[in-house]
Image 1 (cartoon, rainbow, N blue to C red):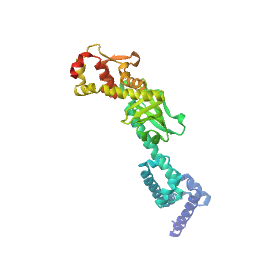
Image 2 (spheres, rainbow, N blue to C red):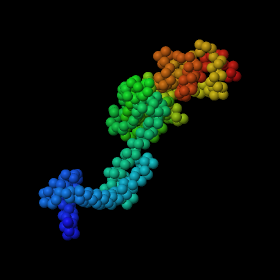
Image 3 (cartoon, one colour):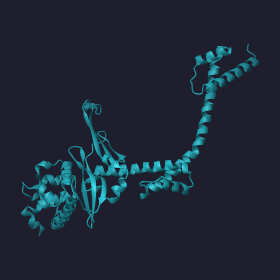
Image 4 (spheres, helix red, strand yellow):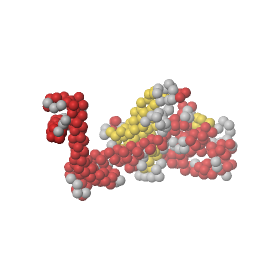
Length: 378
């Protein structure tokens, strides 16, 4: 029969072996077979392996708890600094100072907040990250407003920022996915269209600040201001146009804007200015019919039209709509641009689904060509 002294000696020996093992093996796992071997080497009865196994795990639990507390204590100042940096960055992103935020400005902000200068890289990185999110949110909101996009699960739209002007644009990948559908549609292929929009890291300064992120239903990707006649703004720009399906393409050219925010796209600066002048003149000339169109329902006017009434591309051009805008709107509404005309009822329906000022003006111009409606304007 074991004496109390024997039990105490065995317990002490077990604790010593457990401590030695944990010190040498902080991460290595231990098994009960390992415990038997340890006891055998130490010349202690192997029947005590359960006690050794338990002692090793107790020590390891204590060690993990101690390490966790130490790490938490060490992280406190880092977490506090990160929160302070985030607060400064938030203040910056709410102002125009976030654009091209410099190291000098970051150091001044840190000093004013009583923070270490060593946080300068963290602050600049945080400001840039916030800036990227702002650009992405603004750009995607404009994209969804102007162009078709696949429903959830059938594609993804994302924005990436680039520093080289030639990289600004859009790229799209289309693929077939065969495991998307379930039930009776299982095994059917689903078309997935992923869109990547590449914008300048200075997009907010180059585009958004000029309020030209969307001009006549077209999304501006990049723009450089040019000298322009008094009362106008002129930009060398890139923009997107809608193609068939979900496809969009990039066009390079010029955008003219007047003081009231009217815009015109063209392939030369002179055409942009002239096109805008013509567009504004056409809108003034159509004022009477614009009021008529507003005061009478579309259905009421349409009911009085001849069955063969159409809206032509020439109507859209006559009111000053730019060719890029016409093509993009036709693609958005599935109207055939190549035919050069469409039944006025179809165009009105397309306008109701995708209202654009130019489309409305083209319909008004077409209405004016039907003399039978002139009595309504009296």
